[in-house]
Length: 111
Image (tube, rainbow, N blue to C red; front, side, top):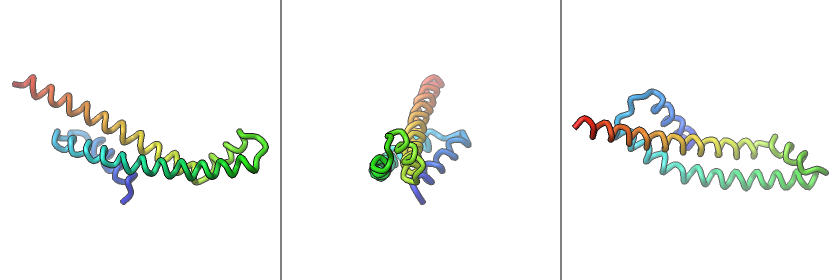
C-alpha cells in the first residue's frame, strides 16, 4: 500500500462523516506521520523533474518551450502528484484539528 493510498483511505473515512474524537485524533496523528514520507517523495520528485528540465533546457532554444516540454514528462506528473497529496494531507490535518476543537468545546458546554 502506497502513502497515497493511505491518505486516500483516511480521506474516504473522513468523508463518510461522524468521526469519533478518539478516531479523529488517531487519523490526525497518522497523517502527521505520513507528512514526512510525502515530503521525502516531493524532494525526490523535484530532483527528477529538475534533471528532465535541465535536459530540455539544453535542447531547446527558448526556456518557455523547454519548460512546456518538461511538464509533459512523467517526472513532472510524479512531482505534481506528490505536491497534491501533501496539500490534501495538510488540509485534512487542519480539518481534523478543527473538528477536535469543536467537539471539545461542545463537551465543555454540555457540562
